[in-house]
Length: 261
Image (cartoon, helix red, strand yellow):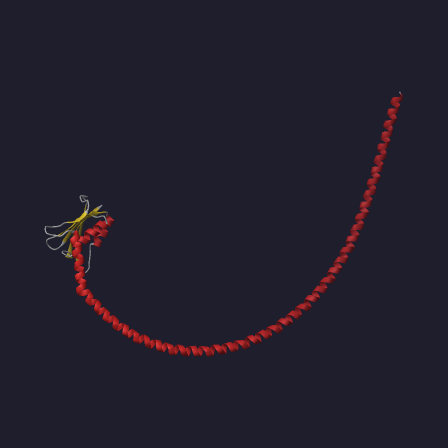
């Protein structure tokens, strides 16, 4: 919180100044009062948040058609917080805030009636002269633009037609040359492709023949190895079988000998 005492000089009495100060103070939550002084100055006592108080001091420096603040003296003090609101201090015979607002509006209306309408009429007359001058100047520019634009379109048409003709001839020649060149490349590609296919066939036939011979040799070798393995297994099985028969016959002979006993 902070407190400021202001003394305002200028056209600040009988002008609705105090009513405006009350509205500003209420908007910024400032507490205190505003009062007229006998020496034609206005005194303001204001308390509030430091930031809001500085905004309030800047806002009271009013300059318009009725109010003209020419000097603002300020002093800062420790706030007493004795004020619950902000109000206008009224002397005997003075009007209240609503009448002050009405008087403010009436004074502004009178000022506009005396000066505003006269200024508005002068501005309208000057605007009419400028419109007339602008119309004449614009008409001349439009006429000149039409003539210049027509000439440019004619020239553009002739130039465009010549370019299209030249483009057609040039494009036809390029298409013919492209066709001849493409035909030659296709013929050369066909011959080259035929030769490569023939060479590939011959090479593939030779590889298949070589593969057949090699495969036949491998099959014969495998067949010989399998036959030998079968014969070896058969001989081994026969030998083993003969041994088992002999052992069985020996066992039978022993059994018979025991039974005879």
